[in-house]
Amino acid sequence: MSIIGFLYSTVGILVLFGYMPQIRRLWKSKTDCREISITSWMIWNYTAIVSLLYSVFDLADVKFSLVNGINVICINIIILLTLYKRSAYKKRRSQSQNL
Image (tube, rainbow, N blue to C red; front, side):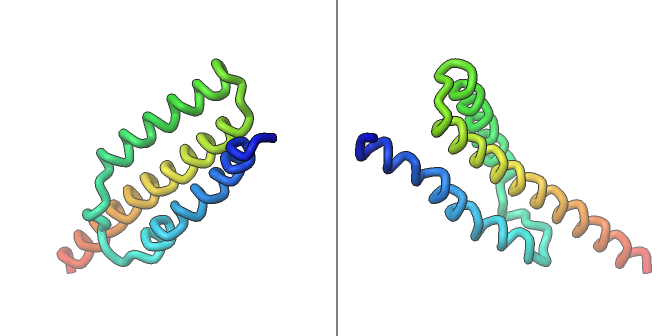
């Protein structure tokens, strides 16, 4: 295995650690998370999904597929958490206004 091949093997783990602070912050957030751009995350999601499909079907590259799979999973967690927080915050706000 070349040095570049070895280094690329570490990318999936590094990417996961890169997403964790954002996911943790969203999980603990008590706000509506308006500072998170859903549009940007949806664009990144699209590019990650296309890259995943390319790596699986055109390249048949396991390492590249795993890294892209981790990207797709983490990006979707961020999108779903953000949408959930916005929905929950909106629901709480409307309930407090009705009191």
